[in-house]
Length: 101
Image (tube, rainbow, N blue to C red):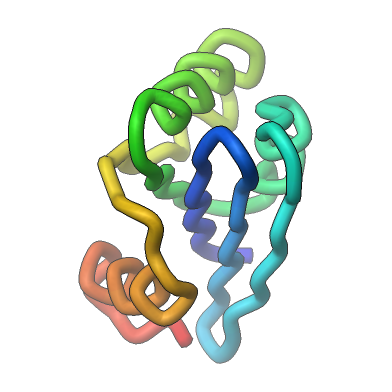
């Protein structure tokens, strides 16, 4: 996949994988497993991490510590309240400055 947006909080993670012509969404219920998330975004060229509170920063720090190659592809780690899938996709289109889905 070309782009990946991870929205994460203390209860779940949502992963949005974008290519030129489609979006695939995956939900990981329960407390976020940072290593599992990192492995699921490992093929993305660019990764954006979103979420409320400190969870997004913890994920970012864990990836930098344990997965430095993936960390180099993280383009942002930004605060975002509980967002709908549509809001996240719209945010991704604006952030990456192109239609992605």
